[in-house]
Amino acid sequence: MTDEVDLTKQSGGCGANSPAVTLMKFWLETGGNRDIKVFATPGVQADQVDMWAMAMSDQGVKILKKDNEDGKVVYIIHLP
Image (cartoon, rainbow, N blue to C red; front, side, top):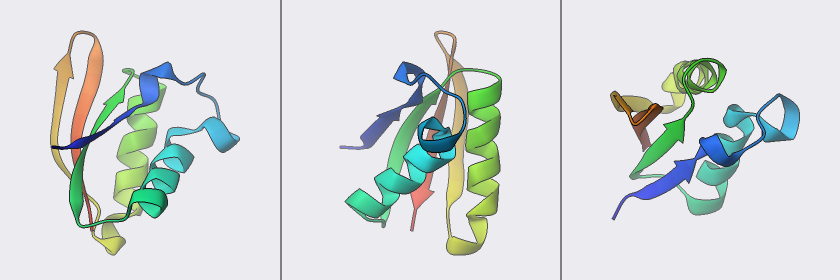
């Protein structure tokens, strides 16, 4: 089973509610060596997920898949 992170339920913005902080916190709390499914709204949230994955690519984070489903951007992201 793939763990899921639904960013669309967040108020958004920056700081503690940002997608980057949410993803980093999830990674630290659950550990790596897994693939996760991430739901984001198109636009700012999706852009922030893309930027976070790019920034963490040196650590081994990879976007394996990115699709649009039911008005959401759905990612499969590998956490090392």
